[in-house]
Length: 344
Image (cartoon, rainbow, N blue to C red; front, side):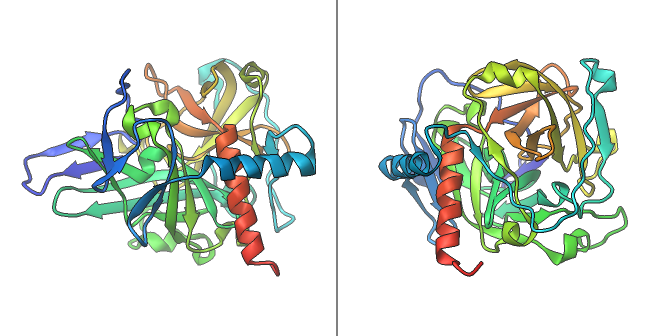
């Protein structure tokens, strides 16, 4: 849940940790931290060290895609997972379409795969224009790469966009109610801030929740130590209706008894899809945003980024599909890390 207040303390504006629901049919000028964002659809990169926003070279991404096709054939719809340890949790579950029977439970052992690769995310911002905090979720998808929702990384106030500068990723977080220090719940002390964020310009230009994704390059290689998810893109979105999915994350909606300190999972069958998003049966609350939505198989293949509850009810979740742009960017970033760390 985001908490926002102006320096003048005019009031407090609360917005959910789900996607922004205003969609504009016409592109509007926008800026991030005072830097103009292109009005046509682009992939952008924000660097927290230089405070610069630049456009990603599409030709370079096409070359990444072509190289992958040469190595692996024409199909380009899946990236493998990495699990450095033997132990993993697996209990295939039969889901039903009854929302009341949708599986929802607390994850008590976050040390096993894939729960240790699901991250709690928390951050804040404080400057002369805006002050706020955020709580959300993310997934490790590469040695130093986390995938989350764009609204977990950015905040809009008075028609201007800002980044949460102190954004921290905590894989396998498992805190206790009486923990006084948030670090007390870190899995074996693991946590990391970010260095760069890749995001689609359409999210800010059109305030379009269907582009609610962001890829974060972390300062520390958490995925190298703990493992990371496989990613898959379905060429035909209708094929998603043949599977059941699970969303994992850190719900923080206090009125339902959550405090953001424990990892939970909830899921069911996919019941509606389009080219960009899909909806599934599950009990999704504030704080799940940005976490992985993964296929109920023996590899825990991630097929979406949890973005919001269905607007009509928290009993239904909506996820942004792990599209080819996401997979291409993750491929590029994985390759960059392993080229820079050949002994790893």
